[in-house]
Image (cartoon, rainbow, N blue to C red; front, side, top):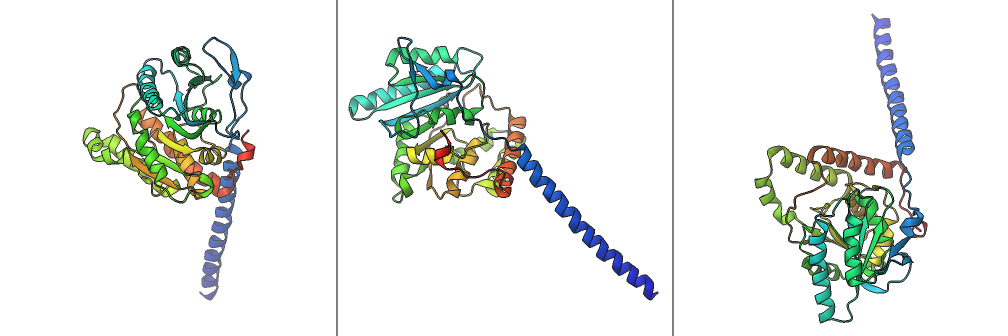
Amino acid sequence: MFTGTRMMDFSYYDLLQYSMILSLIVLLLVVVILHVSAKTVDQTRHEKEKHFLTADGKEESFPSLMDPPSLELSVVVPSYNEELRLPVMMDEAMDYLEKRQKKNPTFTYEVIVVDDGSKDKTTEVAMKYTKKYGAQKVRVLTLVKNRGKGGAVRMGTLSCRGRLILMADADGATKFADIENVEEGLESIDEKPDNMVISCGSRAHLEKESVAQRSLFRTFLMYGFHFLVWFFCVRGIQDTQCGFKLFTREAALKTFSSLHVERWAFDVELLFIAQCFEIPVVEVAVNWTEIEGSKLVPFWSWLQMGRDLVLIRLRYLTGAWRLESERKTQ
């Protein structure tokens, strides 16, 4: 009886010991897999991506985000197969920007349309605006291969001349004049460490209306995604996915230097990086209308984004990804 009790105690001890060893092995395997599967973002440019065409067809080199700013505002428009939706957005944006410049001649701007390896005539459509307004105001960056929205925004941002850099979607879902709201949000931050601050357009105020219009399944996916964002990556920001964000040049350089995600969840990683660097982020309500033709496939895109959120946190936590110095981006 005594011997049996000792053997039982010994078995429990062995089980606990083996469980701990197995857990450590599994943890080690997870870390190894995260490191091995963590791809290094290719920030090198194809030779064709180093230049833009002027209105008369001449090639000129894009500047670098490392250079001092020479304009007040740069607008980066990531575009993938947007030949139909892009003109509406560009007409609205250019009308606003031209009127603002006419009212205030010291206001200078550029719009960089980034064709993310489109299969349609996105580049040709965008070039019409270069020919109409000139390459000092509208430039087209055509990527040789599709990188994803995050990759397109990063490549465009690294080619900017503006003191402020606005990311704006090609579908024109956000009213372009709302740039004044995000600018006010930017200026409302008194303490800007190293002049770094980000102002995010937000649709959070429209959430109740959108819930009423969405199916129960899509509402579940939306709230599930919001929970994963809050739990793994970003807290304090209600709408991380609105494609209308304004950066100071310094904030853009700091955050895009460390960006790894090139697909739909890149906004979350950008804000995660900003919070890691303690860059102030303000959220501002904007007017938003759902536009037909979205490239987002509800179930599979949300599933991919959910996976990316978990991987963002785990890869930074295990050291597979690191926050980089801006000197390494060029």
